[in-house]
Picture 1 (cartoon, each protein chain N blue to C red):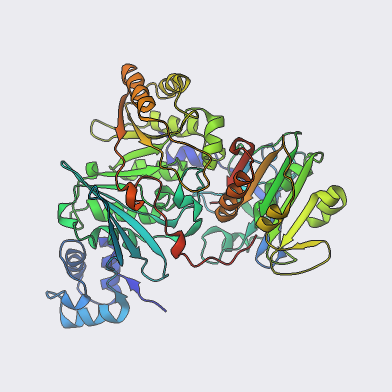
Picture 2 (cartoon, helix red, strand yellow):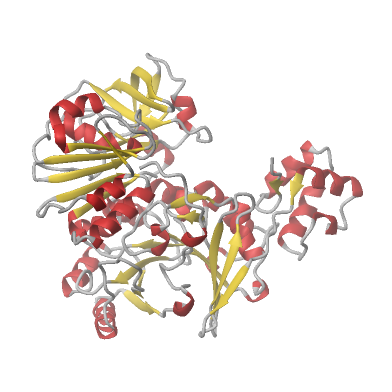
Length: 223
Length: 347
């Protein structure tokens, strides 16, 4: 049985490089890479060795020198209020990367809500660019994190579904409506879903209803 | 602002409360008696407490005992209770399953669930919040059949090990002498395998553990249960294999049977391989179809054969009887989706 001490021994100490708000209540934390990872994997983070690490999907590329994590500030949470105050140069404790939400070069639709964009950012930044369609759902026009990187490369294969705001290049409506409106869903293509449980179960049901075999759906849920 | 509730507080927390209210320390034990051993519905009824103590409690706390607002009764005697949560105007379901030898209560630990398992109705409503230990205990404390209860299973709405602090407090209250003094051997906590929570639970509780397995193959499990991407079953089994369960504590694996998906001889063989060295039992469960599901349940003959094959290989295997199917109280069907005020959408 793994003891608490053994668990702690698995944590590595790293140094925060940057911690910046990129939208209201949404931050990107950058720290010095400790272990290599595969795009789509997550790490556990904590600022206190006595507190169980919380899990975050890595948003940076596999070859980047730093690891990026995208997080929402949750006022009632334990970690994120502390994380949001953390300064460059501070120590942070991280687990080894882990997880199996991993894509390859075969055709795929990447579907995300909110900070669920993180694994796709990692995949994109790691060079998975061909045969990918990225659909991101958000409430406001500032909810489309990393859009400046995606737009010039993915072009029409990057769809931003904005439920509240209207704007140039935005699809006005929820991403589930967008998916319903799509005339034909591609065959021989996998559908990756990442984000809130509500989005994941709703989109999964919608895809299955539209004839997508559940074996072609890969889901990651934030908890 | 809503007052905090007394129900669900451990003795240590009650001592802290009475200390803050400048009441004698022994008052904490008296309050615990009223909360967990007696049948009151208001603080005023705590008749052995001084007037000063009752007044101080009333000013600062609610009792936290909330009656169910609805009950449905199945033709097989199963009852499904609807409980409002203490403050948030949300609802949870609790299933009471009477049987000849035992009367089991299936309690919820969350409003909705985050885990998104493909076959589960609760998962379809998404996640609306954690239950406090008081809201968990209230499902037992407010149960009309409370006196007849023999077993409690944390298999209702939600993933208990995604709510570890409140789960552990509720287990302490259920099993402590100051609380409901139940044997931990009458309580089973079910999980889909949240590893940090499982380690905490195994180390700090004596209750039984049930793990939702559903297929021994990792690739298949990923498609049924997204958690497999985060906490693979091989890691879950390693922890179980390395843990000393002693003679009395039980580990079981829940296995919902899906036609053509996880009910083949190949699955029997792989189950035997991955469970080798673990003293356990497997509960085979009929799949109860939910809307828009791509899955079908295995037929009775296949289930019987599957059970026989596992039994022959030395694994104790049972087929769980479906209960409360007509009132949607059976395994995987609990949901308060219709009652949930839809959360503001962000996608």
